[in-house]
Length: 380
Image 1 (cartoon, helix red, strand yellow):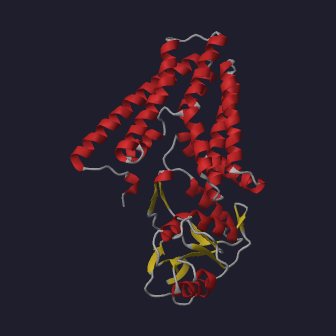
Image 2 (image 1 turned 180 degrees about the vertical axis):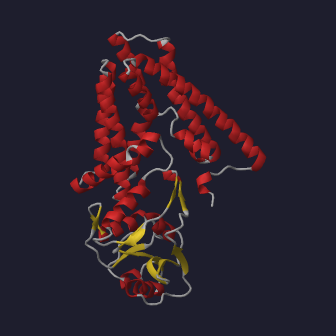
Image 3 (image 1 turned 90 degrees about the vertical axis):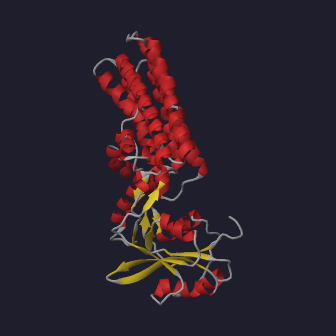
């Protein structure tokens, strides 16, 4: 933290646990993620610091909102209930610290020069590029009666909005159950990522031996854990830079080696299919070409290709990434044609490359015609 970082002040008390974390611990982690350090014991100590970022412990307040407060001193977050504004968090300094803390805890008037950020539960107004989604921030009391609702809401908030069709439509419910179990068991997100890495190699070895169905079971479990680890990190506020690199590094590197192992397995099992060498080149090199094209879009326009237009977000559901390709391989393997499944993956990879090239060309034309691009999700 820098010398200008605000200190953190937790107001109130709550022993109610959400994702196995008490309200006070959740507030501590939220303030820390927003850059507040160290924590002050009370408002009098906080008033001697350069500035103070404070929040209630007996409410679930979306970290994205606390992050907004952290960026601007002299702000206060409130929610309107039955026509009355209830203050929940603030970023203030000096004499405003004690007065604002009293306002948040005991409903006293707060300094009238503070800029009000009023949370409206009916309006999703935040776009989070990291999750490729419009976010409806979670703000609700943390009580025994609201824990179940808060769990559903925070888990939904941790889920990516633009992703493949399996992650978007199949995994959410079981992933929430698994995330809850991991949180209660005290498992770290990195432990879940490590388990998925073991399954990466298990699936690869099984594919290479021609044991396709067993390999697919390992592969699908790996993709499920790949969903769980990120959600666990976000709902428990334990995401780290290392964990992010560890998780996404595995995601980016392993898929083409699965397709290579599948090819070896076909050779080992005597499975024949047309143009095996061309198929292998299209699946292995084609995956890398796809990622390079997506990277080129980010370098050129500053955000991901898949969130530019509605079409691009819909195409992300089925583009030739790992999970859609596993659907193809699973279908053909169940039909007794694993080799033709790899050929189908190769064809779909080439089609996806052609579509990506078209998207890049269209983006360049759009920039020349109307200036810099922006995501359709970031529009009002």
